[in-house]
Length: 203
Image: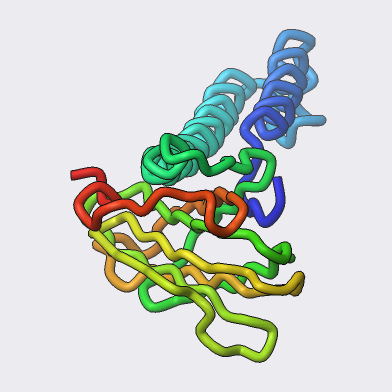
């Protein structure tokens, strides 16, 4: 998935299980020196290493869950546009984590004659995020944008095929790093029904 900067827990789990297996086998065969332990302290070493490995696994699971929460939030936002006939591009999702007032620019080719909605969600309900669209010259290119707590969206009408920049930002958050996810939907210009501001925010 493009732009995703989190650890795949499945891969992390494989590393953890492999290391755990080696530790268990070493203890059972009393190869304490290979594990960096004296033989008579093998049990203590095994317990200590097991604790570290389980803590590592728990941290991977927690990180994955926060990314999932951000993706779920973004998909909830874009659902309103999908019901209006926009095609949601689930094959293109972006996500990561940002500090407060930190931004990330996502380069994406927009096609001529296409109406786009870009939706941004965060994993923390009391965080605030923003999203904006810029053309190849760095000029603001969105025709409409809204922000509501941990959700935000921006609309752009592409009159020519070109590379645009979608800039996401965490403007406020109680956490040092906030996980975010961005998804988008598109439809030919002129084929989309207008939505009220309340409906856009899911109210």
